[in-house]
Image (cartoon, rainbow, N blue to C red; front, top):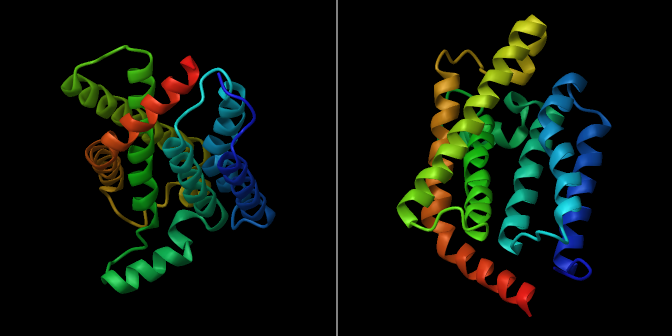
Amino acid sequence: MTSAPKPLHWLLIAATLVVLAWSGLAPYDRATWWMEVAPVLIALPLLAATYRRFPLTDLLYCLIALHAVVLMVGGAYTYARVPFGFDLQHWLHLERNPYDRIGHFMQGFVPALVAREILLRGRYVTGKGMLGFLCLCVVMAISAWYELIEWGAAVALGQGADEFLGTQGDPWDTQSDMLMAMIGALSALVLLAPWQDRQIAAVLKKSRG
């Protein structure tokens, strides 16, 4: 469907690989790093394998790269120790490092648009209301699975899972994480749907031409 990758796509690939190498050079906790960057290590070859057959919009590629950076930075420091999170904690007068909230916001923001693009381009659903509802359902399912993975890690590793969980003593951390994913999904659907629609139209026009 497409020729050689665009310069923008090469830039995104290069930037992602550079940050991946940096994050894996000397992470705070190696086991946590593997668990945090696992989605990136899965997504990169998957995106490469589907690039010619099902290229995504530039908007989505940029957002996926941004999400990958959030994950890799969290993997390098662990979420509770990311320096930018401590800056936010100071600026906003918070009781905890909020970087993990950013991660879960992105966990909703980006997958919502991924689901939307797949559903629209595959013509699986056309009604706007149902489309938004299904995208939100996909996000909440992903968020729930992630929390189950965290629970499994806690059971399997015991104290060794503390860095991965990053609860920072919050008894409602699971619920807060899922709420942030939902807010991220709703924000993406409200703010970026028209922009994504225009880019999808351009991709489909190019594939037909």
